[in-house]
Image 1: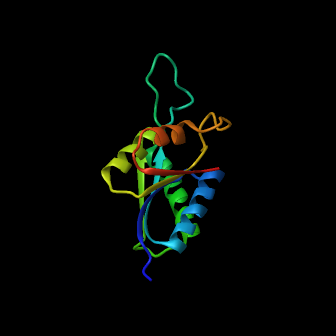
Image 2 (image 1 turned 180 degrees about the horizontal axis):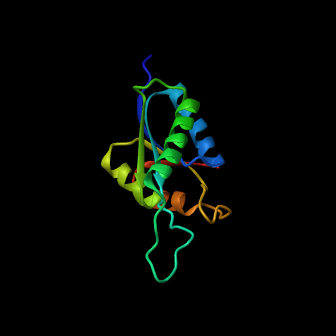
Image 3 (image 1 turned 30 degrees about the horizontal axis):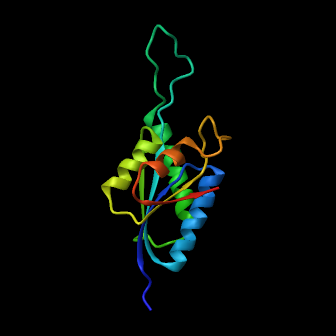
Length: 145
């Protein structure tokens, strides 16, 4: 019997809930023939020395890219799938908007993400990113907590 092919978008940010989402995606890899797109979205952070007299200075792009690469490498290691099955992407901007844009761009069977990430309000019932993704896509969504 041939495993059914599943195209999965897996949004990761390095948080504990994100790591649990990776473990759930790994289970799909054991049940189905999967192709997983790992997506991490980096938010430009204003420099702490911002004053009302000058515009914010964004942190160096190479620094945040290194963080994103670490998050993707860690998730790839946990998934333990072939290189042909896992594709990685780093994007910059609003995480919910970028995840939704990626979901529209490709034909995913499932979006998997953690219920709360590394955002400022990580204690909220359902994170703002997962909540927005859940309510603004036609793709099936698995929110892991």
